[in-house]
Image 1: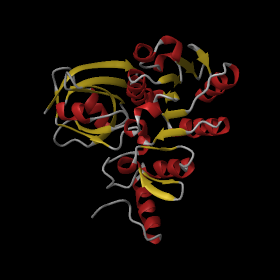
Image 2: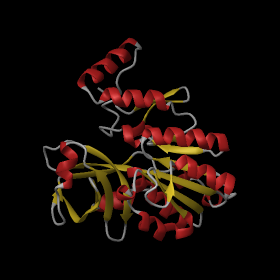
Image 3: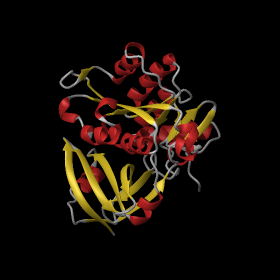
Image 4: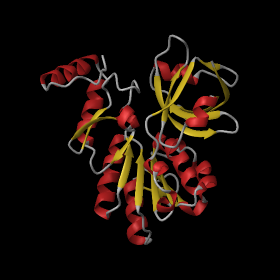
Length: 294
């Protein structure tokens, strides 16, 4: 059992919980995710890691209530317990395994869209703590749905955080792509790497913009993960000319190589029973399975 130390509502249907999970806290790195089960009989939910504290043996998750399983998680209060918290799963951000002196030569741009702001946070925090220059863009629909602005400011500094709202209700107005273009073309900022995490459509157009600007970009494909172990096949995607699974090969990939249209179509189909049967049928014709190991 894993004790919930704190639980709070960040925005409508968006929650943050700090959970006591020593094994995960001492092993996880930015970019990875974990599996949570509210109760013994509950569905497994893949959630990205928002933060971790190795001294306190805790990990932090941020999630939105969408279906029954996420609502069951949201109903938990401080002092309650999760049946399972398993992880870390997936691969850490690529710079974690690179020589630090090389990473420190770069200027990073991190782009978080909506709930994607949460997994961007540990990356921003890690980079800043390791002496790497980093700017952060937070994009959200409206001021009411904005999360973790102050956390991000505390991590990298107020002058390095740029908030934009689709409806113009707070700070800048418009999409994250407009902010990227403005920072580079009008403010003269240079970026050697971009990391974009958020809704699929946001990442698709973010990559389109950064490609035009010549900024190599990493995207996190955690939005299409379901089972988190490579067995369900939901997160199958094409990266370059290779078939990958977001949960076991990622979740981060070279954004210039990801086939977003194929991934979004697959994600939409997988949400229905008929769609899952269609995907299985199509893959059997191609001589491929759905990702199952058995």
